[in-house]
Each structure stands twice: as structure tokens, then as C-alpha cells.
Amino acid sequence: MLTRFAPSPTGALHLGHAYSAVLAHDMARAAGGRFRLRIDDIDGSRSREEHHAAALADLAWLSLDWDGEPVRQSHRLNDYAAALDDLRLRDLVYPCFCTRADIAASLSAPHGPSGAVYPGTCRALGAAEREARLTEGEAHCWRLDMARSAALAGPLAWEEQGQGLRAADPGAHGDVVLARKDAPASYHLASTVDDAAMGVTHVVRGADLIASTDVHRLLQALLGLPTPCYRHHALVCGPDGRRLAKRDAAAALAALRYAGADGAALAADLRAGRLPTGYSLRMP
Ligand code: GLU
Image (cartoon, rainbow, N blue to C red; front, side, top):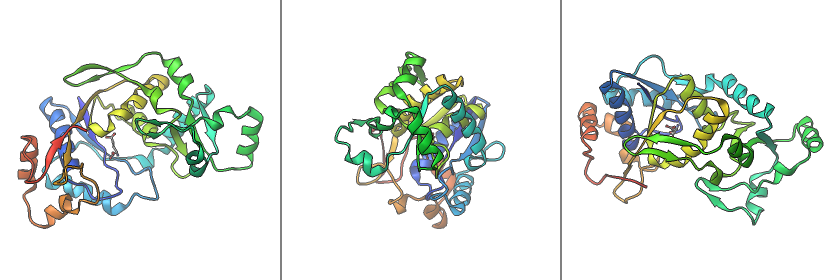
């Protein structure tokens, strides 16, 4: 068994991250397996070294130990580019030149599980126009041709721990972005490629990401990658009943750490499902 915890170093880790890390760590350790860290620092404009360093300090404070060196997504861009090339050669992705404003202005944009569904404008461009605009260096991202990809892959499912097989419904997401100029792989592409490359057998993460698993399952099928088991766990919510976010400074692990709180005791409480007063676990 190999599990992982994959924080994005774009802010401080909070109690919700601690809960997720404890579950992933314990699942691996209980099975005599490995627990690895991955730093999801693909977004160069928002990732900060100080958040990366603080995340490692927070996990050590929680008395969680991990195997090997943390994997850094910013060091793995060639692998994401190779996966994108593979899809490009099979005509499963296309360049999209639309700006955010173009998409917002499209009245036909319906909503899917992860926000507005791209209306498909650039899917219809002819090969000559596409080539010309790429050659001119026009800003673009790469989108998955969802209808084509989903048809090619056929029906898909994954094993959700404790629940059995769960059907994947990637089609509802529309033509998701797999790469941009400023971020050479999207979360969907990088996470799927890395979970396979790291040999992750069990993905433990918040239930807010369950819809993303629809897309990850499809990418696994298209790229010939193995499908791990998943456990999408309940989310830690603050006193306002909303799930924790970066705005909840009081729940930041570094704040608790600096205030002299006992990290190992906090991890033991989270393990037992006990949260500090005012916090609760909820399924979204
Ligand atoms: N970096 C992602 C996040 O923090 C990881 C999600 C995942 O575990 O796949 O939301």
C-alpha cells in the first residue's frame, strides 16, 4: 500500500489538511505500507517556498513521518508534457484561444460539477486556423475533447473505500483544461500522472475532490495508467459551518504550533474523530 498527502504550497495548512494527512498516513502505516508527500507547486505564480517549508514543519509537529523525499510537481513538467503529447497525437486535446471574458460572455455556458462547462467554441476550429493561430503564438490552453475521450474510454468506475464501485461521470465536466501557458499542466493532469508515477495505491483526500475523480479516472483510462482505490473523507468545518479555507487563520497549523500546542496530541484527537471546540466534520 502506498498513500500520499499532496498539499499545494499556496497558503498555510489548516486543521482540514491535518485531518487528511493523518488519515493517509495511518492508512499506510496500519498496512505496513508507505506514506509519501507531494508538493503540488505547479502553479508557479501562487506557490511559495515558505509555505512548502511550513507544511513540512507542520507535518513533523503532528508527528507524522513520511517515506523518501517529497515529490515536487514543478520538477516533473517533462512527464506532464509527455502525457499531453500522447493525447495530442490521438486528437483527444485541442488548443483553446478563448479568454475568460469570451467564456463568461457565452450565454450557453451551463454549470457542471466543477463550475462553468466550456461551450466548446475552439473545438470547432478548422485545422488550418488552429495551426495559424498556434504559429502566431496566440495565447492558448489545451482542452480535453470530452465527448470523444469519454466515448473512446467507455463506462468507467473506481473503488471507493467502504462503498464498493462508484461510476465515473466525466462527461458532466465538459472539455476540461489540461495545460496552460503559465501552468504547463492542470491539477487534473499532474495529479493523475503523479499518482501513477509514485505508485499510489490509495488516494485519501477530501470529499470536495470527488468530482475531480471522474476526470482522473478518465485520464487513467486514456493514458493507460492504473486506477488506485479512493477514500474521499469528510471535511473539517469551522464554527460558521463552512469548510476551512485560508481565511480561517485561527485553524492554521502554524498558528497552533507557534502557540505551543501539542501536535502529537492533536493528531491523536483527529485520529479519534475529535476536533477542537467549534470545529466539526461534514460531508459536502
Ligand atoms: N494539491 C491538491 C489540494 O491541495 C491535492 C489534491 C489531491 O489530493 O489530489 O487540493
